[in-house]
View (spheres, rainbow, N blue to C red):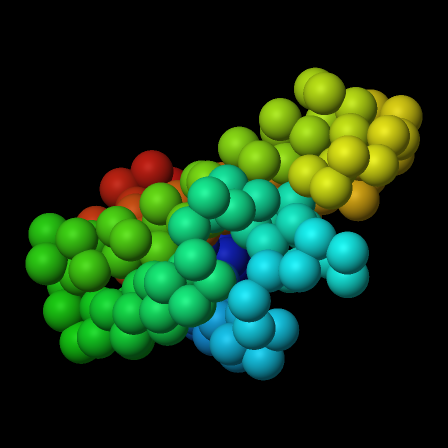
Length: 152
């Protein structure tokens, strides 16, 4: 008889959170390396996932990403509401990135103004939307035993 995969102790949820931590640390490093905004050369803040933060200085956004990653790392040492609240900043970044992707799909243009068909942008940016949804369920699973409650 097949064993129910949701009844074992392994969970991919912490790995989803860890991948978001790595992504945000990578983005922070890229922003620190890119330096001030130069409209002629383009800037990492012109990318769809980071376009929601274009109005802020690059070093503030990079610090924000770095700080959210540190809080997310600390969240692994707490369960329940404390761990959940420590991940709130990272979740906000994930949702902002996903909403930037949805906006780009609806507008039919990337953050830097390049026009593309809606389905092209959706195919290119689907990872941000799916990643935000998966991150939401990962937080619920890690800090509130979501899998055990739903899949009993």
